[in-house]
Image 1 (spheres, rainbow over the protein chains, first blue to last red):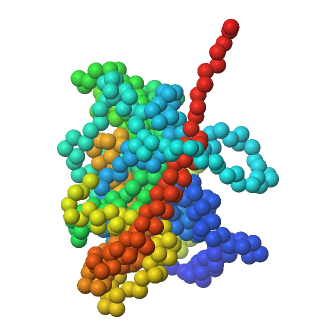
Image 2 (cartoon, chains in turn cyan, brown):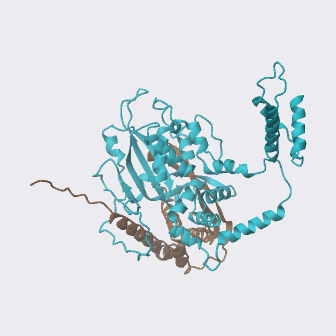
Image 3 (cartoon, rainbow over the protein chains, first blue to last red):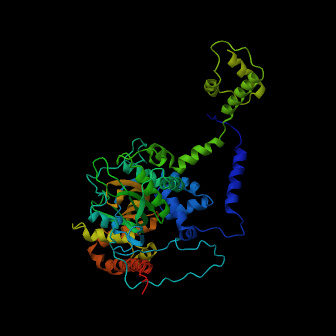
Length: 395
Length: 148
């Protein structure tokens, strides 16, 4: 419990000024322009958009500058800002099959229709710091562009009926976690919305745990594709569908072993990951966690943390997590004084044990409960409180 | 694809939204807005929730939101609308104005020639360039023959 504490307005005002000064740094160095962040820190912008759950490069760049590069703070800023905007509606489902591909690789087949397209990736860099700024190379375009509808790698297995089919079915209206609370058990669409907003580090750790044996599911990166996808809406005023622009997405289709169960023959199953911008690590982590969370549906033993949807989905959000962890900085003076006085009492009793009456033995720890509810005014001196607590204890 | 009479309008509205805002502004410079122009709905930025599909082809899920700026204008007896991704109000205003003027039979041809076609060529060129640059990083496997 924490209580409202008055005072400190002046200190807070100075703290905000100090923050602004620290954020700006040395004023002899030119201030970062938003276009520089958007263009040159695009992967940071992508992460803030993805976990801030709002696709807008300019707002994400603004948030990164305001947060002095603290990504979680920038994500928080974007989440807070989105609550000030009206909701116009829902887009049509994004058609990632029609993605204008800029990178597309498969870890399962060497020769895939359309080919392995590496695109801009850190995968083949030496991870050596480059102290000399090299001139920007000019990439010579190939003779022919890539096919406009790059075939999906998983369709190759689908043709042989070796992988589960995934079809819209009756295409149910998915739950929207920005409108409805998360309840358990959560269906796959709800889980994917949660994972989309989820912290990359948390999901990476969870995904890693499945590879190390906690819910081992023998994954293969069936296909990872990144590129531009058109966004379409159907406004009521028009009554027909229009494109409103294009966005960059990264999609990961994970292929996982499945021994059969729930009346389903042995076949490969799918884990799915999708992120805004270039976010391959997040998309792969999301796909692995998505697959692990399908254990009940596929009648697999449910024992590992990554399979426990209440554990994963309740702790994936960095805004909630950092809020609760950091709230410990708020005044907990009353709570702490209560604990302190209780501990003093117990310590005093330990030093000189009073005669124990029948029936009072073993009361030690449950006594914590009433002490926590005891809202002692913080201005009481510890000595006075200690006495009071002893009196309370005695009655 | 919609085959209704809206097809042409659907295509130009999509193109105006996909266009580079600076190129659109430059192309529209040549056209003075009709004298009776009035904003029915001034440019307003809001959100659409992006929908994805599980596995790319399965049931829908809510993926995350996107900023969209919409705007409606009355000009020359026509009503023009725009929905444009992002928060660029000028982009939405110009797109709505172009939509109204494109519905005006007297102005349609010149707008198509001086705005729509150049924007389409520019967009196609940008996409073709990006695709061919990506294609330059396509892996060409070759097999090493051992022995002999």
